[in-house]
Length: 261
Image (tube, rainbow, N blue to C red; front, side):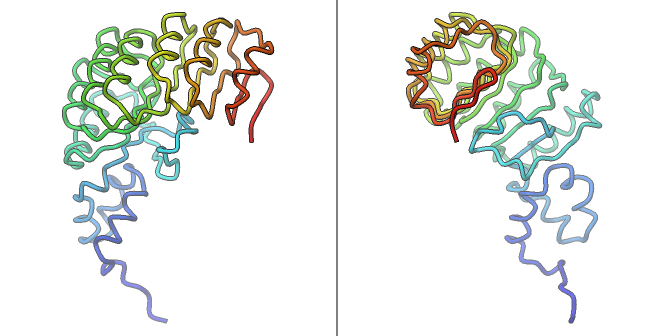
């Protein structure tokens, strides 16, 4: 039986395949296959999802497809290389980037988030590194206004978070998923989540200390929640009120207990 000539694969089919291979392959292997595959890497649709880690962040977000994750761990400590690669990929996308997931150890530079916001107006998912400077945290807060289609965000800092939540409430009508990985969720942030994000579907506060009353504020405000994860959160005394408020949540994970499917 005569073998298939992959060089003759229709370009629209090839682009659909390349959208799923991950950015590492798009850079390192796909362009070397043949001329038609090389040319296909110039289609903006191939660069919609820029995933720099295999970290399990936002695994419960329906807008996140783990099948396309690429591991680029070997460049994450080289800030200049990461910046150059990010600029290259975003320019290839011609404004179509919908997902950006940074490695937890990535070090972003001042102005980088603002640059991304200008060139990625269609962003739906953003996973930020574990450490951002004070200035960059507020860059994130200000940039939210430009991401009208944002659906999911993961942060690891309380700096500027109340402003970020306020801007999400005002500008991101489709927002549904928030992950906050910090040592402690303070009362102001809990109030902001409960009062300004009433329609979110998924909230992940793993490993963050939160007071019982602050959790109650969130549960009373976010009545559309379908998934709540507060495992390893210290400071919570689970009582009948909390369990009753969480009864309508399809998946409720806390401490060593699991409620849901």
